[in-house]
Image 1 (cartoon, rainbow, N blue to C red):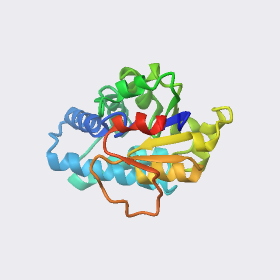
Image 2: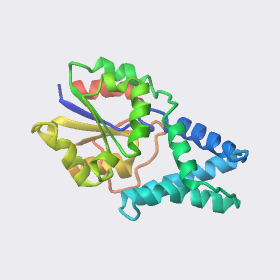
Image 3: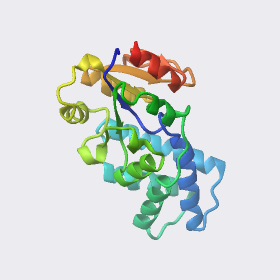
Length: 229
């Protein structure tokens, strides 16, 4: 085996985050009497992604993100929400209630059980991420699930990975692989931690950053071959 440990990203790697997000924002808006349009859903997706990028760079805090993205959306469409905390809570509940696998991801992870240790490393809200990952069955194949909210620091910061690696009982860094879709979160985090990186890039996008990727794949079924060497 080339690698003894895989660190899997969750959203848009193991599970289709865009699918869950679309459901969550649509249901939440409908509950306050707003009919979501395709433009509105796309606008929210862009706003949300921007807020998470700012969190990765340390420009905002998690509480600011969780409300700020909706404040921006409501301002863009002149919407009114009389109970923002309630709206945020319902959104997170919806987000964690539905999932869709990417590339038969659960079966791929099952095929690696006994061959290597597997963990999830994800940003996000603890209750939402755990609910979704457990409902999808990943808690049965992962040794542990590390969530930024629990660790107190988000990917890609080195402190996030330091706290993860502390729990792995001195696994050599060159035996650890991170698999994820985000250059700025997963791959940059892997660079900072000194571990190998596998960029899940199904759209064959160019890497216009300085982030280093050791492997680039278009389908998760390529991961076992990389791990087994």
